[in-house]
Amino acid sequence: MDYDSQRHNYQSLQGNPKKRDEIKVTKARESLEEAKRTYELLNSELHDELPALYDSRVLFLVTNLQTLFAAEQVFHAETAKVKSPFINKLFHFHIRCTFTFF
Image (tube, rainbow, N blue to C red; front, side, top):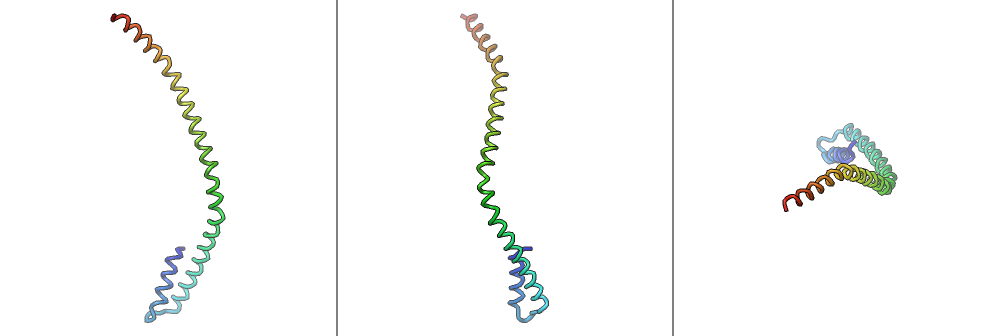
């Protein structure tokens, strides 16, 4: 339940003396109290859990960055294996063509 919505509903029923229906006011007060208890419970849980979550961010980032850097290292190693023969052939071709034209 939405605490602000229930509070607004209760206040609007309280503020209208012409159409004041005690049954609706009582139900609105009960809904407001239930919403307030739910809000306070969730707020308490968040105050307990958020610091631990905030503190765990460093370990999470370190682990993910290590994995990313390891993957990048593998990528560059594999790319070097593929490029090395190609660059050698290109170099020898360049040398052969350079001496041929002079």
